[in-house]
Image 1 (tube, chains in turn yellow, orange):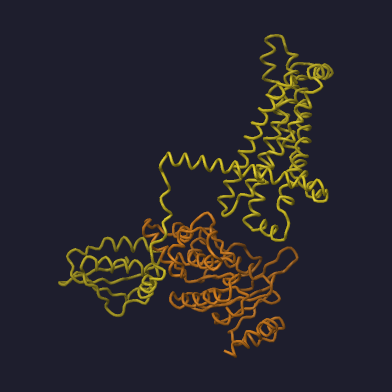
Image 2 (image 1 turned 120 degrees about the horizontal axis):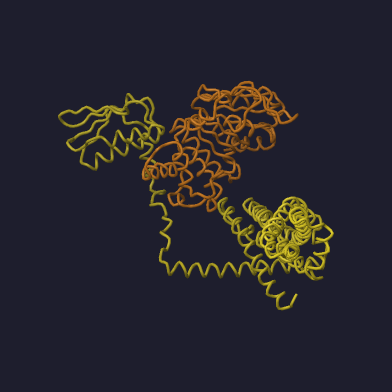
Length: 372
Length: 252
């Protein structure tokens, strides 16, 4: 128990006991709250039996005293009031620090205003993104004039990080997806006696669309997030500011090598995805449809035209640039907190995938018009 | 209050601590000094239970924390406060929320009480009330250090660890921070362990000083440690910078 109460004719006598410390604050608070001050005219408090009193305990005591005084009860201490109470008075009466804490201001909850603000913010974001792409392009042009500025070693590192190390996962996923497509279509086409078209479906599907699209999505998740996180934590660490202060252009050493590295790595990954995809189709046709491998190979050459492979591959560098730019742009936007870093990495990946799919749709329309 | 006995820490073949002893008595300000790479931070991390030593005993209020379970360690942690060198404020939270976080974790309080107690800490360290709603990124270096101190005091600890509390501050802010530390030490009867490089800080605040040399600690009162024969300690207290400081002190 944290306090003992005795009722006398004039009022209440309080005896504080035990430890009035932060760890006990809940018990103290409930003990103080249960105190009935209504009938009392005088409250006398003794603190001699306290074994410990810290700032939190003193705060609870001060609240009790204030409450009593507000209720018109005279308060006195038997013996000297504890030092901590004086300290609290000292801190809280220091008016130079007083004043209500600046309110964060209730956010504008009016729906119309919110729509307007979001539209303006989205427009501004788009402009900033365009400026970012423009800055990256001019940096690239300047670097092309002086190739040493392309930083081949840095590019090679990014080819390794985003390309070589991604090979197993890209190969595995391309293999599995083409097996799934072949299996699903085989079930349907067999009913029509058109088993052989399974090969067409796998070959064209993988080469034109799935190879490059799947690879891009995997890479957006793997490397787009890595770019954003890397640049974002460099910003939090003021490393980017340090670069600028040393007269090094961060676009040249951070953004460009990543964009170029990924632009080299993604087409190579796409070729691997194409290869393992076709292999998956071949294995399924061999064991599920009993189609000899030679027949599969000749059917593939019949099914595809000379452009099919290139139509898929030509998209890869474009997707790569989109993913790398989205990752770098969002990473460079991180300014203040670890939470912002997490949010922007998420945004980077989502937007990279969105941009890739949007670009893929545009490519589809373009190739349709070009009749290939 | 705090005892370290026979502490051994090794990383691979590199020996950091080789039988280090240290004792901090109640109500004193104990300075920990050492060259870069002498293992000051490792010592602090070991005392805080962030890493387990290869050998040795670390007693806080009598209990050996190297042998404690996670649950026991948690209750010990409620009894001391720490500030880290860079402040280590949670960047996603306001100063007020930063101070409230340990309270929410360890005390079961109502929201208004939480807020009032946290604001009390913030004013105690001399921060203006409007700083409470700011995010760490909006604070100056000195304010970050003060906010970190407010958070360290959230649970009214008896024992306070300060890691390089004045590093990165200008001499005026550093002196003000030292004053604050002394004021809090007196008013709240704290025991303070302070890791520092700042000679001015040591001379202003510390009662006793421990110097880490060759993996061990030489500790004594400030007056006596200054005249310790070990070459590094001599160089530290009698080097160019120290002499300049003493000259200034004598001149004043």
